Length: 260
Image (cartoon, rainbow, N blue to C red; front, side):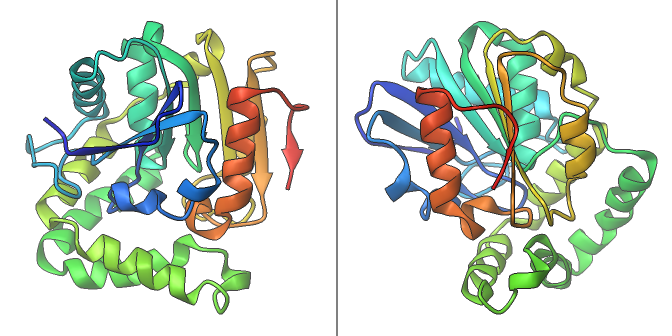
């Protein structure tokens, strides 16, 4: 069973799935701004935080199954699921397997598109570095995930992200990278899912092709998207704004496709 924490007593359950080399602690900055109408279920994905490494390859489908096990433990039949980056990939796999369990799906600085060949090759080349020089891998990559125009302002947040990543078990990280290489395109989920879909993206995100993701969204009334003036980590860079959008969109309604 995955490690998790439950917070709040709201009637609407919001499941929060962190990204690669993160853990459930990354939601700390957003928690004060999230509506009291939410009950938060924060989960450590396999090989991250206090959750065990389950396989040599942590596929997104494996993650989805494990998340469903946590929901079943709490007898939760229908929830809101939000996933950051890799957590978004797991959320899409969850949507594919358990659409009846979703009130909404939020892609939080993530993508429904599969990796292109160049990205897959980059991930494959990282296997050895993760195994042999994990600290270097983390320190070389994490700062690039933040808005380059606000590095000085975000220095403390970058340090927090580095500490969080360095606390990750390298073998757990490796299993997840292998799983991300294996993941498939999930555009059909965006085309067919009946639940509400919310997409938050960063104008300066170097990990996600924001323009491609937003332009490729189908024109459906259940999909809303926002582009924020930040990098890949809205939960650290713009926690109040991100929470406000989540509160409003998942509990109410706003006009479509705004840039903040």
